[in-house]
Image (tube, rainbow, N blue to C red; front, top):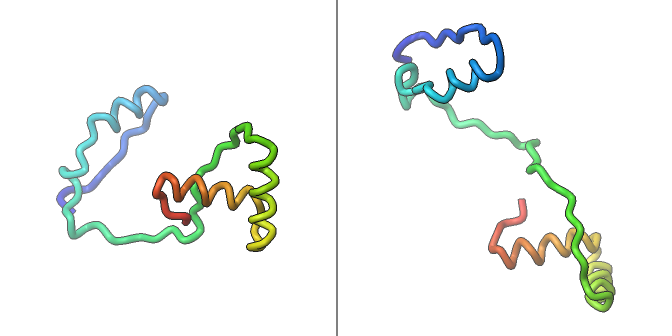
Length: 89
């Protein structure tokens, strides 16, 4: 560690935002100061959306999901993520 980090008392969010926008961690930390951390219980933020599918698609998705034993919405997420080439974590 290069020098001790002392945070000021902020009067409001604007003052704090200004401070962090000019903050340079290189003045306080060196690469050897950092440690790898894991957050095993951290879940990605999700947002509900509405989407319209033809009725025959919905029936087909529900049938396929039922055959493989997963909820149909989980199957839709798998389809979307594979189409976007995103891993399901």
